[in-house]
Length: 228
Image (cartoon, rainbow, N blue to C red):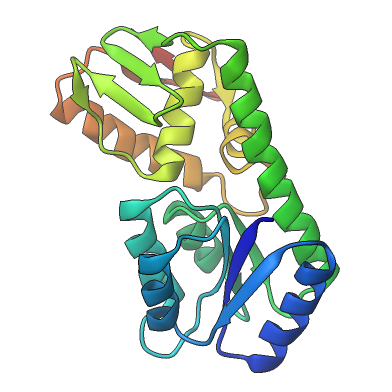
């Protein structure tokens, strides 16, 4: 049984979300602060986190950053603020989905299942090709979620890894920003395509710092591709 942590300071939200998720067969634990969830995760990591952004004390953003240093735990962020910048920031920090309040509990359950299904599908794809895809001096170790540059580990966020690993598997092929957004976040992204531009900018900086000969090339008027 998959374990889901819900972190939200609104008791009514916690109660109804827990009820719907348990009805779907998930094990659920609830927390009203980021500090409580952090302490619980030191003892046992869940299979997914449903995280409110606006929390007393440690914010959802801060908890997300703390988690991403340690784990690729799937995170669905929720917030009463429906600002585009909040969605982009949440996704760039490494959340797997973003839902604005008020939301339908059924929609949240659907999003939870979609994220789990995407992770399972990603694992199946690796089984089909368990070699080590490469491009120039980049080598992808998908099962370990590692990318090496000249035998050195490239330190990446979850979304940076998703984007770069996809480009390595499809080196020299050009993709539109919309295609990359869909691939990295796994659903029809509602927001600014600049989220991909920001990921590319950060990846270029990290590749350059390690002297990689691989390059994420801009295809003007279209998108990006990886060349070696």
